[in-house]
Structure formats: structure tokens, C-alpha cells
Image (cartoon, rainbow, N blue to C red; front, side):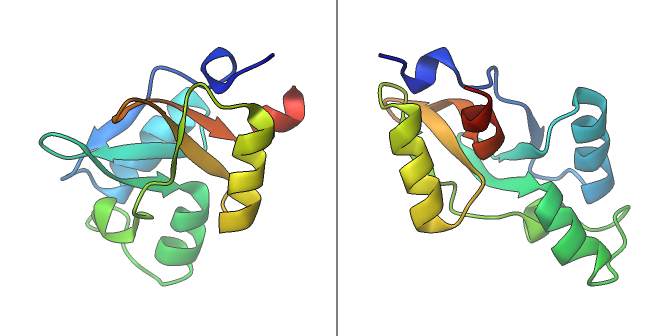
Length: 121
């Protein structure tokens, strides 16, 4: 049986909580990813996605050079245990109307699984 630990994207890519939208978007473009976690002092605070970029920054007319990624990020971060299945992750994403969830080992986020990842399986 396939579990999330075997098909998640890892390691987690993040930016510090003070990062601007421009900095977060540049890392996303360089790594060819559609989301990035915002790292606080001890934990992840939110997730910044391409949807956040379009709807909360570009459409709102905000300056990506001065707007903090955290101020337009999605939170709380939706999580799921690494030992659950892609089908269970898909059900959770559909129920919460999101495209990705963070995969956890205990309370620690260790990866990301997206609808796109599940479709590829």
C-alpha cells in the first residue's frame, strides 16, 4: 500500500517570516514549485501559493517588493500524517477545497502533497 511518505515532495522549501512576496515567488520560480512555507522562529506559520500571489497580491494591486509573503499567505496550514494514503489526502483536500496539504511526522512538517502529485500516481 502506498503511503504519503513515499510520494510527498520533500524536503520542505521555506522562506523566513520576513520574506517579501518577490523573494518567495523567486524561490518558487527557481525551484519550479507552486507553494512555499513561511518559517517562524520555531514552526511554520503559513503557506504562500501561486493562487495567493495572483488573488491576494496581483489582483489586489499590492507591491511584491514590499508586501510580506506572510501577510498574504494561507493559514493555518492543513496537515495530514505521513502514514495515511494518497486517497485519504485527496479526500481531505476536496473536503477543505485546497490543492495541497503538509505531510507530518508527529507534529513536524516533513513534506507537501498536492493534487497534482496524486494525479501523477
